[in-house]
Image (cartoon, rainbow, N blue to C red; front, top):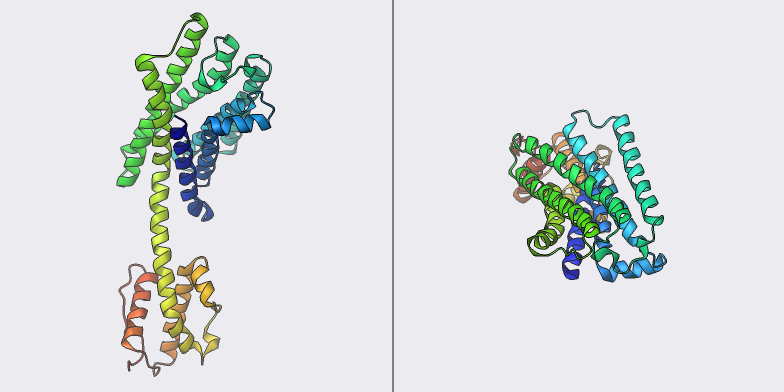
Length: 337
């Protein structure tokens, strides 16, 4: 079980890392924040992490409270993502303020129920349902929020699934729907089990209910994170592939650019890059575009400049890469040699 929890945590951190390139470009920042919070939440669950962290916090099971509070925050962040996706004009300021206030109110209620009760010092608090109504009330704040969100998110995904034409998005929504079903199952089983533990002192969660509880605890987060991060991962891989191809072509076209612009430096607004900078500069596509344009301008101004067939091929490839939708052409360049 501990190994599975560590694996889950790793998956969540990897998903968050894959969203970083999109977040840097100003996209999917709420998704990155959600994945980071959710990854931190799941990281606190394994006992090898839980116990040392709790020892640093005074051995009062404060880590258990942090886990529940982070879960509520993650739910709120995911709700913001869903609402923004469903709102053509985005979330209003009032809607955002309401989300913050509701989340704060739930966490404050959890703090009162947690720190105002003595059950919080129970050994192995995260591994059982404590037969106390105050514990049930505390944990129910998280379970009910999870259940309500799961139903709301599932309906939103179903409505959006019928409109999607991109296969990867349809797969993502299907995985999220599966996660919503699992989250709802987990929340219902947890709430019922906690109530039964109070009513019947000898209650044990066994049989099919225990199997469903364990499977949903492990598989639902995976389906949710993979579903939410799949499109970002595919886009990140595509962007990485384009970045690599642009960088290789930038390296190949630079000697030609340097030679043609040597006598007409006034045509260039592109800055010089060292060999190391060519390998590390961000946005190689922008430098490739500027150098291609300046090469073309130089050849228009001085058509007598000799260009080899290999250089012509590089120029044509740069034309294809930088002028999407425009056919490659070598008619604007000078004679070959």
